[in-house]
Amino acid sequence: MKTARQYISDIKANILEVTTQELLTAMLNPEAVIIDVREHEEFITGHVEGAVNFPRGVLEMKIQEHPLVSHHCEASMALEELANKDIYLICRSGGRSALAAESLQNMGFSRPLSVAGGMMQWQQDGFPLVSYKA
Image 1 (cartoon, rainbow, N blue to C red):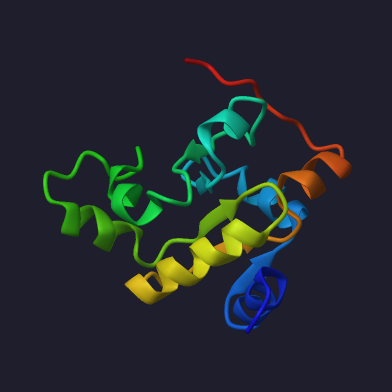
Image 2 (image 1 turned 135 degrees about the horizontal axis):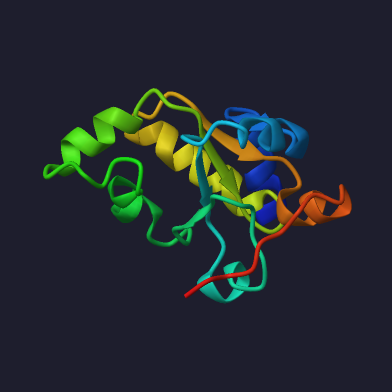
């Protein structure tokens, strides 16, 4: 039997992780796909600019609603448009984003990227947070 920490460690061996600095650089592109997989209550306390909140529990069902591709009438077309894009996934510490990256990888996405250290590392690095706007 594995602990959650061991399970996530195994997953991290099979996914792509990026640093918070790499995410900060990616944010220069207005079409960067950044998904915060924390719960809404966590998201509203502060998040990365441009991030869309799709909590881990609904990510697979909601990803085709990302604002970058939500103009498509068919979910399959939206998914195809996202399929080969870098998709930056962030959570509190990097565990849920790793699980999310594995899940998207299993769905056929080629570049789901888990942000190592998550929001804890982002804040430790002194990078900016934005407040939630309803």
